[in-house]
Image (cartoon, rainbow, N blue to C red; front, top):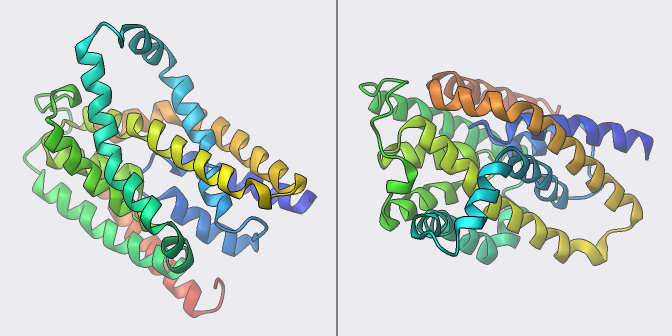
Length: 273
């Protein structure tokens, strides 16, 4: 148990740091588990540990969320704001429920993660090329409260690609937001708000479904992972929000391509399976 807790702590650090970067936290967890030889919880771990990052988000935006909750019954703009978020969550939620088993059975592998990292890295570089005329500090784009329902659905459809581990939920939703006209700050914030119902709902669903199969030791490992990932996410989120909204994706695109290539080499060399 002691060794497993140490592995969980390392993986929680990885999750907390990578959850809000466009480099796929789930992909990094799959590869990290393979490198560390940690397979005590199967695919449950990669999904349920994300609840820590969701809690960190709720705490980070707690003042705004409290104000919105108070205004929700009387403020049409706040209700529309959350309608946009829920609409954007629909594609990933629906496909996730329909394809849960085949996705986890066939796609939760380092090879798939590597290929998705490379493909996503190329996509990020292409998006940056398309947006080359839009300055990093340009705030003239749409704020996400100005999105139409159709645009929110497009963002959600792009985000649904992140059901493939290695694609990145935050990266795909931010890119989707940029492509429909959001400025960088608004695209980043929209992505983070979308994570609250989507990741929160996914992790609770997975935990409840898996609960009868989990013993006390497994629940302890999940709790430790969630708490530690939340702490690391809390420490990182302010910097990450600022960085993502003000800097290009070129560095992340290059990282993804290099990381994907190294994972393929590691698989070919038998370092990870």
